[in-house]
Length: 252
Image (tube, rainbow, N blue to C red; front, side, top):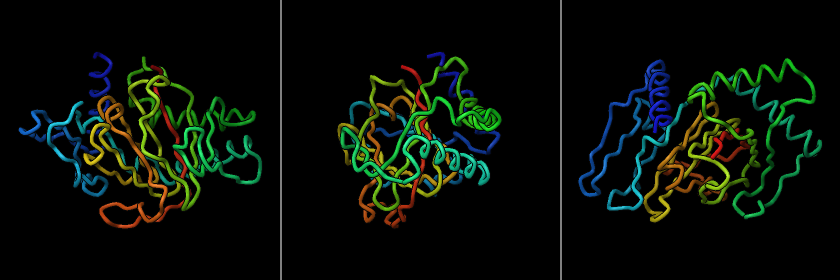
């Protein structure tokens, strides 16, 4: 509980610097719980809450457990991270860009992925530059006592890459899943585990950082539509380009 309180306090301080407020709360009497929705002036641009039904749902949840920081990384920082992510994938998979058709559990399709223990094959200066950027823009948002798993790079192929609805393995990692979005816009759909019709969508533009924690991390699946015709946000088709995400998960 102390970690969670400190986490929220740290994020509030960071958000105040970015003029993001926590002022909007919705009391939903029918379901007898409160949405503490992290709302900013730009939230309507990135969130579609049209299908977030409010009848009794167990387990309950709070929208404040999904946090989006749009434009968190500059264009220069995005290019830097994308370039070295692709170099890392090339060193592992070879020069030819060959995507895996399906994950072992059939959740991820047309993708390449790897874990990062080191970013380069010996360039200490680049290594330090990447690590310093991620410390500043990601790890410093969280309490220092949180321990992290190795960073996960996931690349989805243009047009055909996608992720089926799932909850990240709860045996593998803890209550925080964060992601940096790079190269192209992506639509993420989150559905309640006990009622998929209770859902909301988020537009993840390049340079954004999103955080799923606690009730959203455990009680909602997330997906990126595989079918390009289903890759929509507020009924607008979002073209599916090549996409890279850097994933951060804490140790359970």
